[in-house]
Structure formats: structure tokens, C-alpha cells
Length: 85
Image 1 (cartoon, rainbow, N blue to C red):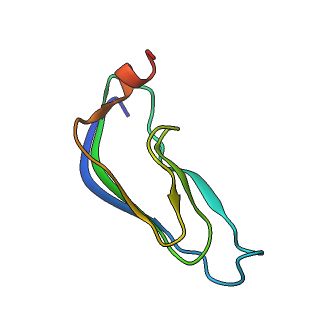
Image 2 (spheres, helix red, strand yellow):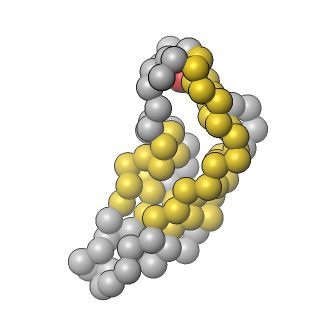
């Protein structure tokens, strides 16, 4: 993928069962290629009964724990600027 823009995404993790067995964490809710034409903005993450999400996009953004709803808002994440840091 060379060019893609995504706005208003909603991602959730929902793992049923016992917490000790299902403490599953997603590393990222979205993973995208390292290309300058990729832009992501306005993502909501939700973590259900067990587990959670460590990052929003490619290791960036806040974690979301059980029962939490987090929002990554504002300027789009431009992958070219992210990888220059």
C-alpha cells in the first residue's frame, strides 16, 4: 500500500472467559506500512472483558485496558514523520 487515509476508525478487543486464561493483549490496534502516503486519524479503542491494547498505531498512542475507551484524535498520524523520530 502506497497511499491510504483512514479517519474515524473503531477497534475493540473482546476476549471472553477467565481473566487468567484470556489476558490477551493486542500490541497495536492498527498496523500500517512505513510509507509517506499513509495517514490515520480519529481512532477509538475499546477493551472488553479481558486483555487490552498496548498501542494504537505501530507502537504509538496510549494503551487501553479492560473497560476503557481511548481516543487518538487530532492531527493525522503520518507514517513518514513517525519513522523520522
